[in-house]
Length: 83
Image (cartoon, rainbow, N blue to C red; front, side, top):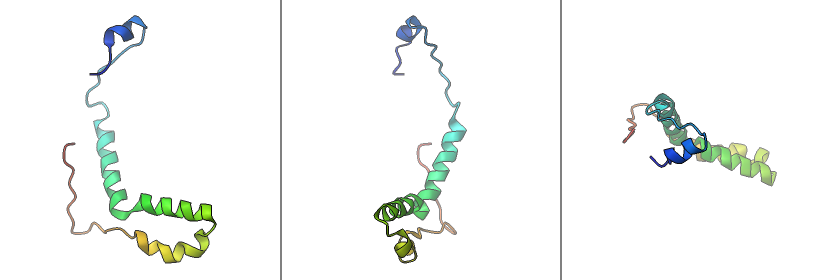
């Protein structure tokens, strides 16, 4: 909707409209993001990266891993609105 098709054609750049072409990939990534968020995976990975840069990862890993346990999804309902 934001592409000047006439201008692109003038420059010889093909423009295609492919609605729904990547719908399955988007759905899979949303489910992946839900799982990552529920377990705090990205926060934990970033925390470990910071500890590594500080040179304290080995000393802190056992103590800090409890900070990023996240939530188990058993008997829980997750929802996606607007997909």
